[in-house]
Amino acid sequence: MSAEIVIHNARILTMDDDHPRAEAIALTGNRIMAVGGNAEILALAGPMTRVVNAGGATVLPGFNEAHMHIFGGSVSLGELSLFGVKGFDALSKAVKDYAAANPRLPLLVAQTADYTILSETERVTRHHLDRIIADRPFLMLAPDHHTAWANTKALEMGGILHGKDVGVGNEIVMGEDGLANGELRETNAIRPVASMGVTGGRESLGVGTGGEPDHVTAEERAGDIEVLKKGLAYCASLGITSFQNMDGNLYQLEMLDEIEKTDGLAVRVRMPYHMKNFMPLSDLKEKAAAWKARFDTDKLRCNFVKLFMDGVTEGETAVFVDDYAHKPGWKGDPLFSSNSFNAVATEANRLGLPVAVHAIGDGAVRMVLDGYEASIRTNGRNDMRNRIEHIEVVHPDDIERFAETGTVASMQPTHPPGSAGLPLEPYLTYIGRERWPYAFAWKTLVDASATIVFATDWPVSPLPPLSCIGDAMTRQPWAEDMPDHRLSLEETLTAYTRTSAWVEYMEDRKGMLKPGYLADIVVISGDIEATAPENIATLSPVLTICDGRVTFEAGGDR
Ligand SMILES: [Zn+2]
Image 1: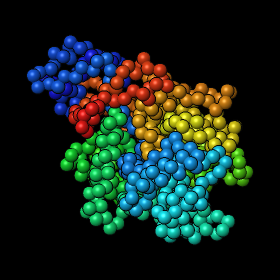
Image 2: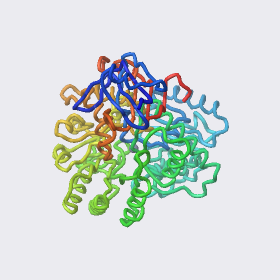
Image 3: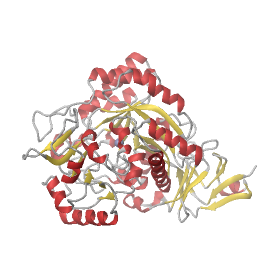
Image 4: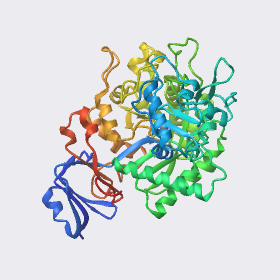
């Protein structure tokens, strides 16, 4: 039997410790047929085989983005990106140009607006935005999506200009004049405005409430599916063959299932059951476990539980062990009590569902570790591959507990202030210098034998994995006496391939290039090992194959 695709003359990094390097690879069906030297693999080619001469390019297992948001990310592709935009004049021009180019949008939305987009000291208010655009509703989101700013028109149309109770941990910030000042903190505060957009804000439900949209027309649903397909194609164009979504609801699962049954998913998807603090524990059995049974293929699976323990540092909603450095007496309020989180972790694990928790501050991280310990005490096992998302600050007393509890550190090399064009303030002042050594401390965690996976949290940060890999390898300390957190290429690639497959219990079929494994491959222009870390972002995928199917080809039409 001949191979369907042969790639030869390549620098193959298999991520398989037994056979780390090869020159050529053969695929048949959706599987890897053989990996080896040029001659032996070319011998597997027949008259119908597609033979690709890689010309010395690098071949890797397809990237597995361990934390992102497909629906929100896909929607963001059609929105204004303010990445790298600084100062009022530049902001004004970008927004005006976008508004002029999109005369019919019901809501103008901009992404990736730094907290310091105006200056280091001035916070954005509706008055700034009104000076840019007053006659159409405009919403601007911070990179982390935990804070947004709206102009007066948007606040009025969303019915929140006079404020509104949006629940614990959410806030419509009020001005001295008794009206909303334009800053909206957390999803429940942002949604009244965001829901006026083209998708009706449906993309934020998975993360906001974990709930389902109501009254969706067939036309709206078809539009949402088209948006998702664009997002999936975008992932494939970046060499991504798998991603783990960090919000979920049945609406998204059913649309993705439909895409798989019609066009075939261009990327493998793992989606969680999103648990909120108002949901009864019985939902884990009645919904989460039921969805796990229903969506359980190598292309689409729903087999873990996601929840939020805190918010973000810049919004003062992250939870710390000690007070915020700029605000004595304030540590942040957790979104779950210890008791209720311990119960969720224990019950989810009992049902065979791993847990992934957003925890930014060291206080939230500690509560999650406590909950995983509680689960181990009750369930008597610690191979649950439970994870903590972000871990922006870890308390020194908790570093060893990751390895002890088998907790996976899921971190974002694109997130440290100072990296990827992000400003240093107000972050550094808010956490204070004593905590700097323990911030975004991925090297410290790796050295303490923690298992680590990497991702961008798209659309929070730009999605290209090669940029993110470069960021992990070039991280600059905030001061000379701070620890060096740069990782090696091998450590970083492992976090993006083999370990991210392991964390979703698929290490027996993906994350490595070896015979019998799923044919998930990316071919990258150039020799990644010979490229300086600061230049890795300039490399680009030329061919992506997922499940044996070409999902992206540079210069191709998809
Ligand atoms: Zn996220």
